Image (tube, rainbow over all chains, first blue to last red; front, side, top):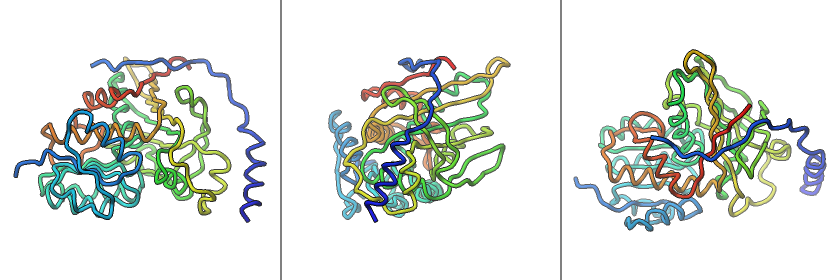
Amino acid sequence: MLSIAGSVAGVLRLRGKGGVPERTGGWQEVTPQR
Amino acid sequence: MALSPEIGIVGSGLVGTRVAAILVARGVSVSMVPHTRATDVLGCGTAVLCHGGRHAPLAATLLNHGVHVVSCSDFMPDVMALLDLSDRATQNGAVLVPGAACMPGLSGLLVAHAARAFDDVEEVHVAVHGTGGPACARNHHEALAGTSVGWHDGEWIQRPAGSGRELCWFPDPVGPRDCYRHGTAEPALLQRVVPGLRRITARVSATRRDRLTARLPMMSPPHAEGGVGGLRVELRGTRQGARHDEIVGIADRLATVAGAVAAETASVLQTEEVEPGVQVLGALGLPNGPLLDAVLANGITLHRYVGH
């Protein structure tokens, strides 16, 4: 049972996450201003 | 009755040990006990509940004895039960802070912080990636199988957990993750932070395998600690008559974040006058600005997304 589920999970993982759009911004470190 | 200067910590997992480390480092007296000996903290001024399982029954007992309670639980039925203890806390002159972890917890503080950049905040969308300790990982697993709640144009909506995929960018090194609705009390807490919100959603990152196996028992024991996780808070509204967005977030180990939030919240309850009853992080009633500063002073870096 576990091996079957593991195989299915492996196949799903191999299919990847799909396309990720290009990032146009970015993260900046900030310090909260009071 | 004089408040005991000691802070009790129930649970000795990742979050509990980090709460203890932060408090001990600044000279606070702590009493750390396992869940099975939780009544040992009845003599403490404040108790931080970091154990797995439900917190509401123990919180009710502690509140009956006038002990302030900080709960790290993010299990939806448990948090809703904690919110129902408001009258009990008020009657006993005690304060209960539910959801003092990462999401909920730091998320509320970040919403309150970012909301200052708006004339009117209409929407809040939060997402989290990763887990803390094993109990958190089990909760993550279960939360993808039930029902999620959201606030949509003035009414509560229910959607299947695991639905509503959205690609969310977290601060590096986490990056982009597919996130889904899940069973969390976060929307109910955030509505108390900004009562006029029109829409609130809370999502969690998950893989296809997570969603496929959500309704099954966990196939392997959870890791002792998840890797670097992330929290992302997006606010939408208006500023000076124009549409405005703000996105802030952090990337760190979630148990470290939860420990910092719980420890700093407990410190506030011990040292400052807070009105008895249920107090939500980010809402009026707690010193949210200094509290956020104190949390970030534990080595957690706040990021702001710039661009589109």
